[in-house]
Image 1 (cartoon, rainbow, N blue to C red):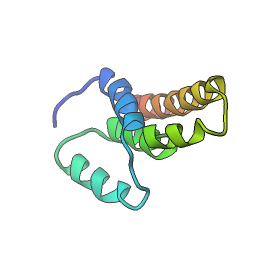
Image 2: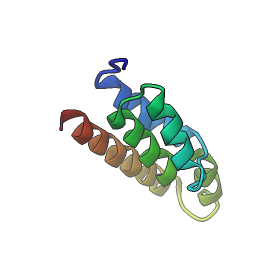
Image 3: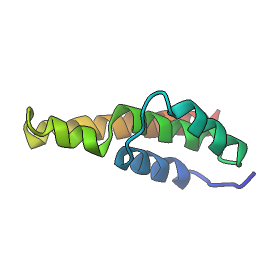
Image 4: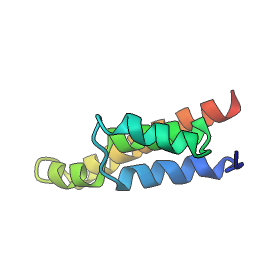
Amino acid sequence: MKDYGIYGVFIAAFIGVLLYMNCTAMIPIALALTTSGIPLSVMMSFLIAGAGCSLPELVLLKRFFKTSFLVLFASAIVFIAICFGLLMFYI
């Protein structure tokens, strides 16, 4: 298993926000990446960020909400994903 370190949690959260992940496709993706050697902390950070907030979702929400709300929403999702990933990293 490769040691991705603490930076892997941060990188996975930001990559997860940029990708569109369907909730039904998350489990096979997580299983494939975990069996290939990705640590659980990085995987959980990636899955939470990808399922909670995605770039296409933000584009659609832009029609209804102000930009400041979208930034707050995306920041909250990334913050939660990073916190949970760090919690998994240290436990």
